[in-house]
Length: 374
Image (cartoon, rainbow, N blue to C red; front, side):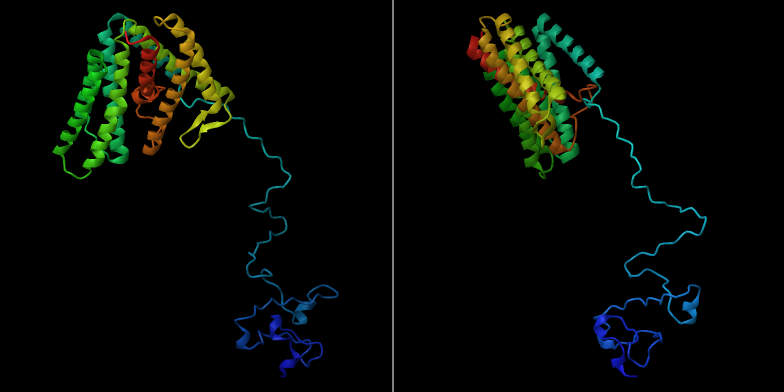
C-alpha cells in the first residue's frame, strides 16, 4: 500500500484519503512510523454518523467511543434510566444560609476577672492603710510568685534553667531593702542578688551556663527591682496615697484601653505583638488616666496640682501600654497565652504585673520631681 494515500504524519490522525485506494476501510491500529511515535499524539477515531439511525454503524465497521475524548478527561459514569445519581452536583442558584453574626468577646471569664480584681483590691487597700509592713509583705509575695511563673515558663518552653532559689530570696530582700533603705538599698540588693545567681548556677554542669545566668539577671531586673519602687513610694509621709494613685492610674489605663478599644477599636496598634490592642484603645487609656491623674494629684497628693496630674496620667498610659506590650512580646516568644493560671479570669500574677512593674519607677520619679520624696 502506498503511504501517500493516507494523511500526513504531522496531523496525528490517520484515516483513509479521499482519493486513495483504501477508502472506506477502518485501520486496525496506528499506521505511522515509529519515527513519529514520540512526536505525535494519536486522536481517537470518531465513528461515522448513521444516516437512518439504528445500529448501521456496526455493520459499516465504524469504531465506537468507549471513553473520554481526551486521555486527561476523567470518565463519568452515566446513570441508568430511573436511577438517581449518588452524588448530584448542587444547584448553582441554591440559596446558601447566611453566617450567624459573631459577637465581640473579651476572650476571658469577665465575671471571674472582676471578682478576682475586687478581691485583690480589698487585700491591697486594707494592708496599705492598716499596716505598711503588711503591704510590703504582699509586694514581696507577689514578686516571689511572679519569679516562679517566669522561670517555670522559661524552663518549659525554652529549656532555660534560671535558678529560682537565689532569685526568690534576693527578690524578697530587694523589696524590703527598697522600703527600709530607699533607692540605695534597692541597688545594693539587686547587685548581690545577681551575684548570687552567678554563683548558684556554678553548682550545675557548665552547658547552658551563659543563657541561664543571663535569664536570671534579666529576671532580677524585670520583677523584683522594678517592684522595689512600689515599696519606695510607701516611704513618703503620704505614701499610702501615692501607692493608691499609682494603682488607680494603672488600673484606669488598662480599663480605659479595654473599654474604648472593644467598642470603637478599628486600627491595630501593634498587630505582630498584641493583635487585640488598637490605637483607639490607647487614646482611651490616655484620656482616662489624664482625667483621673488630675483628680488624684489635686485631692490625694500633698502639694499636688491638677496640671501635674495631667502629665502623670499621660506618662502612666504610655508606660502601662509599653509594659503590656513587653510581656506580650515575651509570651509570644515563649508561645504561650498566659504566664500562669493562679488568678481565674486574669491568668497568672505576671499577667497582672505586666503594666504595674514598668509604671512604678515612672510614677515614683515624677512624684519626686513634682512634690519631692518626703
